[in-house]
Image (cartoon, rainbow, N blue to C red; front, side, top):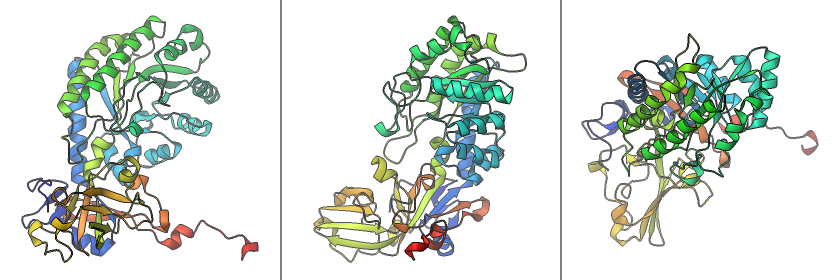
Amino acid sequence: MSSSVNPTRSVGFFRDESGRLSCDGADLSALAEEYGTPLYLYSEAALIAAWTNFHTTIAEAVRHASHEAAEALVCYSLKANPHLALVSLLRSLGAGADLVSGGELTRALAAGVPPEKIVFAGVAKSQAELRQGVAAGILQFNVESESELADLNAIAEGAKHKVAVALRYTPDVGGGGTDKITTGRAGDKFGLSRETILQLVSQDLQHDFPHLDFAGLSVHIGSQVFDTASFRSAWQKLLRLFQEAHAAGCTTLRRADLGGGLGISYGTTPAPSLNDYAAEVASFTKDFTPLALPAVADAETPLVLFEPGRRIVAAAGGLLTRVLRVKDEAGRRFVLLDAAMNDLIRPALYGTEHRLEAVAPPVSHQKHTGKPTADLAGISVAGPICETSDVFLPERAPEQASAWSQLQEGELAVFLDTGAYGATMASAYNSRPPAAEVLVRADARHKCITPRRTVDSLMESETIPSDLL
């Protein structure tokens, strides 16, 4: 159906010798028969490969640029995909955790992530979440308001130990793939301005927070960042802020949390180079290390932290779906799937697209029984939900839609690169139970890690008042 899946790819989703799409050699038709569709699939091998590539490249860049004085701590961002099985696998490989809620903290700890490798971010943490993080003994809180500092200081006083914080800086650098996932501009709800941070770290205001350890500064400019120059601009501003903060008397600052956001390819534009990103990391680390060293305790090395999510898990996942109906109407063809926006909301929410690949070999497609594609004004791929926005691939001219124009009713297809922001953003809209999830392991072994729910299970927590019966 398409040549965009590499037939020689050794891990993840690839076509076997017969031309059929598989996940690490597992038969997708058999998985659909056993678990039903829609179905999220994750390649364990692809997840390990993505983590190893990122961690090895970035850790080496930090060590080399700092002359072995600094270590990189890579904290996987749970918001991309918080499934316990995936977080536990990454933890076993050495990953820490970046999280933005008390629920994600509970998940990280349940998956075995050491508290000293956990960073708690988020623009508006509740007091209950702050207490939860302090009780767990996490590495640091990335703080985004003065009131959060005050609450955290009071909680730390009650816990009778200092709590490490990093102030999140807003560098006025936008880098996200869309406005909705760009977080580093002045006027965005995230972080603190240069002026506010310098006020907070002044010696006078530091005295207002005696139970806090001002350990570092953090920055995160958005998700799905393609231009590594955006990172360079933000990190150069961050470095200058470190220098100004030290000059203002806050000499305890020793950690730089550089955030995440490095983009991936969804099939149209090549992904930004990890080596180019690592070069920017090395440039920052070279200048940051001598600044941070004087603030480091005897048993601690200066840390440079990273919070990747999508770059680690996206390509490991695919959403297996079956064609329910193919309808030619008003000069257009609608390919209608059993997957819907409740399973994968990114296209409806952000206007983004995922590659769609038929499971069957391209040559196996029979001639479509509807109108010849040349007679159609356009072809689109959509779901069954009662919303016009439930569209995965918007209308294309027939010559631009050849990759899916010949899909037949009953055929299987896979949306690729859905490991990030897929199942974690799913809902039960239209009373549609979210898709089950399966982890595909070595030698095509597979394990259901989230069973498919039923409508009855969705209703279990609902009650009808007795006077309505």
